[in-house]
Structures are given as C-alpha cells and as structure tokens.
Image (cartoon, rainbow, N blue to C red; front, side, top):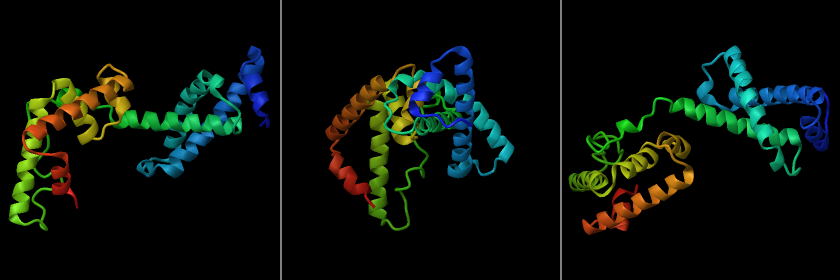
Length: 217
C-alpha cells in the first residue's frame, strides 16, 4: 500500500490511464475497508448479517463510493487527509444506500386522504393509563380534528408529503424522489402545507400553543 500525500492522490487520480488505474484500485480498497468497518461496528441493525455478507455489501458500496469521490474531486480543499475525506464520502454513500433499501417498498399511493391517518393507538398519547377520562377524551377529540384538518385543508400532494415526513418519518430525499421533485421544492411544499394546516386549525379554535400544552409529557 502506497502512502500518498494529498497532492499525490489528486495527481494520480487525474493522471495517465495506467497511473490512474492503480490509484483507483487502491482507493477502492481503502473505501471498502472503511465501509466494512462502518457496517460491522456502527450499524447494530446489521448485526444478524454474517461477515461474508457484510464484506459483499462493502465491496458493492465501494464501487459507488469510488465513483462519488471521483465526481467530487474538485471539492476537496485539503483540510484533512485525502483518504479521511474520501472515507467520509463512502460512509455517506453507505448510509444513503441502506436508507433507500429500508424504504424500497414505500409508496405515496398508500398515503391518501381516503382512510385514517393513524391507527387509534399509534399516537402514543391517547388513552394512556396515566390520563384521566376527561384528558383522554380531549386528546382523542383533538387528534380526530387534526386528522380531519389534514384531509380538508391540504391538497393531496401536500397531504402525502407532510404525512410521509412528519408522521412516518421518511427521509426527505426518499420522499422527494418518490414525488419526482427535489429537496428545495419539497421544503417549499412542506412549508406551505404546515402554514395552511396551522391557519386552518386556528379557524377551528385550536392554536399551536394549545395543542403543544395538551400533548406535552
């Protein structure tokens, strides 16, 4: 393994084909080891996978990570070792890939205003033993009104975006991808949806402060 300086990495990765090929292969190997460490040491959700399975994942992800590093060479400023910078990119690639795998079956088609927003016990705040009958009834009533407001005040697209992000905790990039848009446009859509929902709720006599007080622990 060659111990290159930052300048040598950049020169060789952009150099003649034979020089570049050698540097790329070593970079891929380094990134694979960094990804393997992350998957095996930092991801408890992968604890059931065998070492060979994690090795295969690391090999596959290292290919994508190497391409990502090459695409971003111009952004390297030399504030750290090149390999440290590249490994951080590789880990982000791994995180993104695992996140996509987790939500591969997620569909906006299931988030429509036709059915209930949440099961009756999904909020974790209604009908709890420590609440008195009056408090529990008040919370249940407000939850029903919030659910109705989501359906009545928002467009179908706003509804899908807000429920996906705020209720189901789906990552922004996944929602943006499924909606055929980008993060900036999704931010705007969510901002408008929250503003419309807040205004609608206030016309129903439910202020934001009232709801925060009602549902606080």
